[in-house]
Image (cartoon, rainbow, N blue to C red; front, top):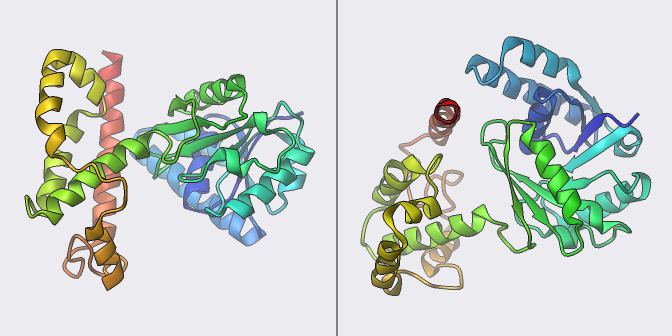
Length: 314
C-alpha cells in the first residue's frame, strides 16, 4: 500500500517539510545519505513540531501523533516502494538532483508525483533524465518551512497540470498556502517579486537616498505589515486602478530598472563583505547578532500566522 510521504534530504528544509507532512497526518520518512544524517533530520523535525505545539499552532495531540508518524531510512529506493508522494530537498546541484530524479522515476509508478524543493533551479532541467517528466513539479517551501505558509508549486515545460493541481491540493491539507505557477521561470513567483524589491532597495542605499536600516524599516514597518492579508494587487483594487496608474507613471521612470546584478553588491562581495557570516555586509554584524534577529523573525512569523488565522475565522 502506497501511504508514505518521502522527503529526500533531511537538512534545514527537509526536516521542516517532514514536520509539516507528519503534522498533516501522513506517514513520513526522512531519507538521507546515512542513517546518522537522517536521524539528525528527524530530531530537527521533532524540534519544529514542538515549536509549533509550544506556540499553539498545533495541539499536543497533533504533535504526539506527528512524532509517531516520523521515521528515517538511508535508502531512497527501498522507501520508494511505498511512497505516494516524494519531495526532494537535497543540495542545490542540478546534476545531483537529475540523478536522484532519474533513479526515482525508474522505480516509482507514473501516478506518484516527484517534487523538488529547489529555490532557484528549473524543474524542467532537474527532470531532464526522467522518462516521465510529466509527473515532476517544483514544491518550493519558504524558509522556515515549518512556519511560513507559502509553497510555490511550479510546473515544468512537460508537467501535467493535473499533477501540479493535485500536489497543490495535497499541500493545502498541510496548513500550507500553495500557489500554482504555470511557467518554469527563474525565481518562480515570489522570488521574482522579492528580487524587484531587493534591486530597488540596493539602489536606494547605493545612491545614498537612505541607509540600509531605514530601507528595511520602511518595508518591515510599512508595506510588509499589511501583506499577510493585503497583497499589492488587492491594494491596487482598493485604492483604484486609476490612482495606481497615476502613481506608476510618476514613480516608475525614476526607479532602478537594471537587468543585471548591482555593481554596489558586486563591490561588497569582491571586498569580502558577505554579510553576517563575515561580520559585515549592508550592516556591521560585529555589534549585532544574526541568531537573535532570526529568533525575532521566527517569533513574528508565529504571531503573524496566528493573527491571520484569527482574522480569517471572522
